[in-house]
Amino acid sequence: MMKLVIAVVQDTDAANLISALSKVGLTSTKLASTGGFLREGNTTLLIGVDDERLDTVKNTIRDTCRTRTRLLTPGVPMTDNPNAGSDQPVEVQVGGAVVFVIDVTEFLKF
Ligand code: 2BA
Ligand code: 2BA
Image (tube, rainbow, N blue to C red; front, side, top):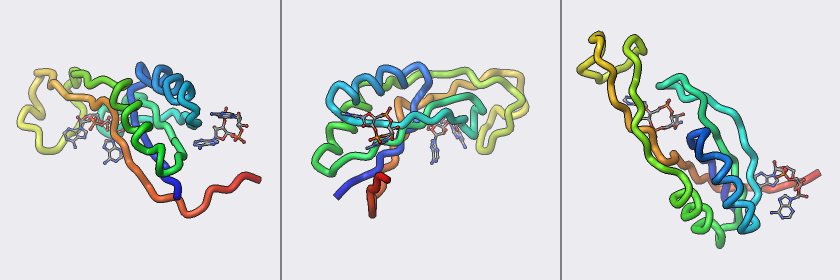
């Protein structure tokens, strides 16, 4: 069985992550993406991997991608934010990585 790992990472971590995956023989596809909340560029990696190597992928992502704090500029619409509408920048934790793991029904190459 195979999984598709969808990992949303920060642009600054993407190159290191791709290299680290490649070093252990894992293939990835890099997509340029934009976060819906910050409206800033991020990177989405698609990583198709055999089940036995899923932990390697997770560990590599964990080891490569760091959590950072970003200052959100006022004026960006938000929900559930008590500071909404004020002039104070709001600190937002930007994840090391947001990871989805999906069962792959078929992996085909034509
Ligand atoms: P690339 O990663 O640039 O890989 C280009 C070609 O290099 C691959 O062709 C394959 O022949 C070889 N290659 C890639 N990774 C390798 C590795 N770890 N060891 C040995 N050879 C490797 P394709 O297999 O036809 O793949 C074409 C493109 O499809 C890849 O471009 C990548 O963007 C995507 N892809 C392939 N397998 C993937 C996977 N398991 N997960 C995510 N994306 C994949
Ligand atoms: P953004 O949507 O630009 O979100 C950046 C960070 O802003 C998030 O970090 C989170 O700390 C915060 N944030 C996002 N939505 C929020 C909200 N409704 N209220 C308060 N704070 C909010 P991460 O959670 O680490 O997410 C980083 C990036 O991963 C996101 O960028 C988005 O592109 C992607 N992502 C996260 N969760 C997702 C999900 N459930 N589905 C699809 N993409 C997701």
